[in-house]
Amino acid sequence: MKLKPALNITLGIAAEIIYALAIILAAFLISLALTKL
Amino acid sequence: MILRPRLEDINNIGYYLGKIMIGLGLTMFVPIVVGLGFGEINPVLDFIVGIEITLIFGFILTRLCYTEKDLNWMQGMIVVSLSWLVAMVLGAIPLYLSGHWKSFLDTCFDSMSGFATTGLTLVQDLDHLSLTHNLWRHLIMFIGGQGIVIVALSFFVKGASGAFKMYVGEARDERIMPNVMHTSRFIWTVSLTYLFLGTIALGVTGIFNGMSPLTSFFHGACIFMAGFDTGGFAPQSQNLLYYHSTIYEIVTAVIMILGAINFRLHYHIWMGNRREIIKNIETVTLFVTITITFLITALGLERLGVYPQVISLFRKGFYQLVSGHTGTGFQTLYPVQFVTDWGSLSMVGIICAMALGGAVCSTTGAIKMLRIGVIFKAILQDIKIIILPERAVVVQRFHHIKNVFLQDKMVRPALIITLMYLVLYGLGSLVGMWYGHSFLYSLFESTSAAANVGLSCGITQASMPAALKITYIFQMWAGRLEFMSVFTLIGFAVAAIKGR
Image (cartoon, rainbow over all chains, first blue to last red):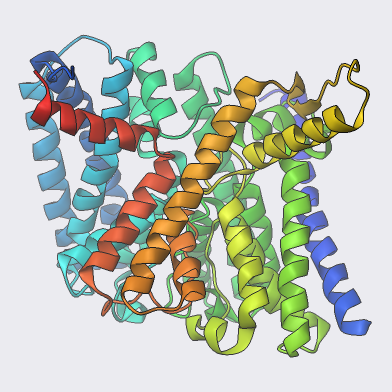
């Protein structure tokens, strides 16, 4: 596999995982806000 | 006047159905190899029986109905709807021979639940089911998540035109590449890449949680297949509660969200267009709807004081929510806790999440994000038309791989499919109420079945009436195929009886 496509796939997977983690973080902040307020 | 189906129609349908059956039979070699590796001889024999029956029927159909003609639209749709029913019955055979299901109907229920990536189950004593059978339960989720027809498309079907009709019939109206065979192979590439990464992540997490390496990686592979394909089966009867691990829950939550992303979006992101993930109407809508439905659920739980600690509210409340929204059905609660602990508002939050689902052309069921986004944009456009001066030209745009101008011809199918899902959710809850369950619990279980989720509040169990089992099987089937191929099959059956 050439370097650039492999790098694109790796960064693409990283972008998708960061998106999923952003959703999880938002939910955690909601939980935090509701239990602390 | 309705035209009676011709012999040529039946011939074409039989031939392609036979090919799909052969494809399904070949996938049964995977549990056989694993079973031999684990030294489970009796379970392997169950699969040899299953393969024999599947391949014999497949070869008979392809021989009897041999044709070189391509499928037309009607035939393609019928092949898809029939192949899911046939896969349910044939896939159930090795499971039934294990003796862990009370009846063949129960096994068919689990088989359809697996193929349709639902996750509701009627298995008995799951904790003592052989590894071979357990792997098959999860493998059929993996096959069903990609699409049974996709399996056949990747290896057996030659005609590109007929292949595309079956691809569309399986509720995948977005072609990723110009050639539908390349599209199906790309879907496999994404799934197998994530299978490798996900199994390693879950395997390592399991080892850190004290599981033996072999068990940890076996569970990792099973949980990944059920998570990424938004199925919801698990190797243990307590489902994800068995692991009692925050890290395990976060890793599986990430896997579920990845499974809810459109394969076409995976393609563009993997090709270097990474900004698409923050611009696309589906990912934006998914982020917003998960946040709103979790807020509803969390408010309900907070009001009743069910989880006073932030970590327990997050781990219990959010996990069930994201599991429901992505259509997975992993559960870290006992089903009865929804009834005894959660209260109405939080259950309504979960029901709304389940009803919405993930992205189109993903492994999830339900209404889906593109349709929700399009309907929201259409409402916005109508409001603007009312507010702005009469001479103003109102143009509504959204971003889905490229900028798209909203047109009525996009809104109509989105509304029709949404309406049909709402009717399906309602019909299932009517049957639940007929058998004495309350409206809320019936709606919860019905939405879970029709949206291919798998969360349960306790209605789904082996002792429930056969009519309710058949209702849920129908809901899982129709919900997974998004109605059109199911309606075509019903029309075909009517034409065969009443046609001239």
